[in-house]
Amino acid sequence: MKKIIAILLLVVMSITMMVGCSAKETEKSDNELTKVVISEFRHLGWLPVYVAYQNGYFQKEGLAPEFALYKDGPIAFQGMHGGDSQFCLLSQEPVLKAEEEGLDSSIIYTVLDTRLYGFVGSKDVKSVKDLKGQAIFAGMPGSAPYSFVSAILKEGGLDPQKDVTFVNLDYSASMTALSQGQIKASYINVDNRTEIKNMDVNILVDTSSPTDAAKYLKTDVFTGEIITTTSKFAAENPETVQGFVNAVHKGTKWINEHNSEEVAKLVAPLFQGMEEDVLAIKIEIIKDAFTKTGYISEESQAAVDNFAIKNGVINTPIPYNKIIDMQFVNAIK
Image (cartoon, rainbow, N blue to C red):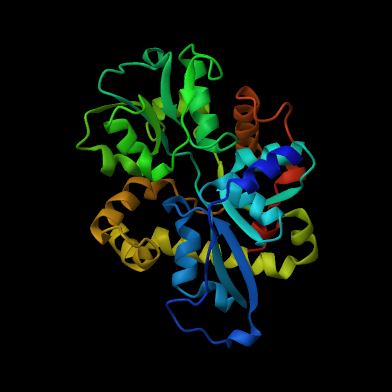
């Protein structure tokens, strides 16, 4: 694990700190607030956090949030464990892997109740089997997209370590690489349908489809996109963690009570370069998957464990109470 951490930290290109001042005024002055830093790579899946930020919910809980932006989830996660932040927004796979190797974390909230991932191929790729010997993109090793694409390849009868070449790209560059023939297939988030609608590509897998969700995730409820902190921080700062969870849950409720256009208008300042109407379309695609409660059940966690084991992320199931900490969700006010 030490080697993995070292490698991940070496590939960090930059970290951008965004000073935490909400779009709305709060009742407390800055010197009364507790600073919290959130490691992340910006993505619509974590909208409850961004809504909480824009609506001033963190400040109302006595917190002053800042974001630390990284190029991928595993790197953001290592930034948290390196002391750069107190909370991290990412998928479960890096957290489970680290837990198995002795790096303790507490998963405190899920933002989505299913995983909305896709896999697309160029126009001549009709099935996964057509990818043998080809270059593909799937995020960085250890990430959830990498595990997801590995699962797809295995289901298609290919060996991820032998039959394809994984290309290192930024997520934003993968569609260009696909259209230019530099790669033959790419992981996408389901909301990226907006980017591929005019591209001549084949959608090989889309887990927003119940059929594909059942085939690749093996469950209807897959709480893989989460918020985590270190176990040490959760134990030593329960009031801060509770305030953070309270704020995020208020953001979750706001999303579920407003339409996609209203959500897009609120969070647009955090997604600079994206037109508000496009942002609204993307949000509409994923909106029904947002959690209502933030709760991770033992059953849904078992599904995530099984997925991680099958795809070589971990070797054995991690006990639910060792990594899932729902005390803060249960105490939401």
